[in-house]
Image (cartoon, rainbow, N blue to C red; front, side, top):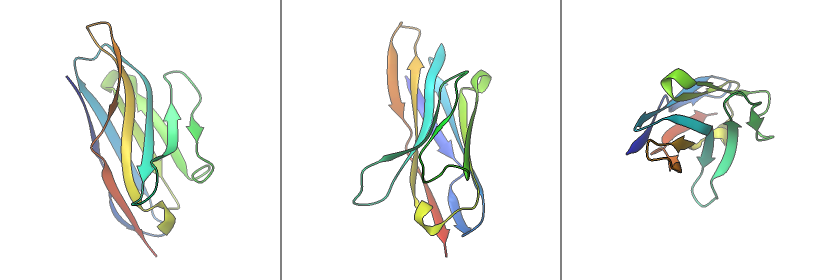
Length: 120
């Protein structure tokens, strides 16, 4: 069993910063892509940033230049540094990862989500 546990969300004023963390735990051999998505009520979940191990990060246009994704493979953890936050960044942020298990399978997992609220 694999779990993704997010932390670091909260309330911040516009222009402020937050750092989200997502740690994968359980029967993990390695992780493939690890990324961050966000969702507001009534809208589809959208990609914020994604990063394959050893690869170049991919960012949504709406967060380019403000958000930075990074990962620590030894800890199976992915981070999202969010700077210059705007009220429109308010959403529930979800971690997503592909995990190679000891059973030889590659499965995709979601975290439970963490709320980020940016006040104007």
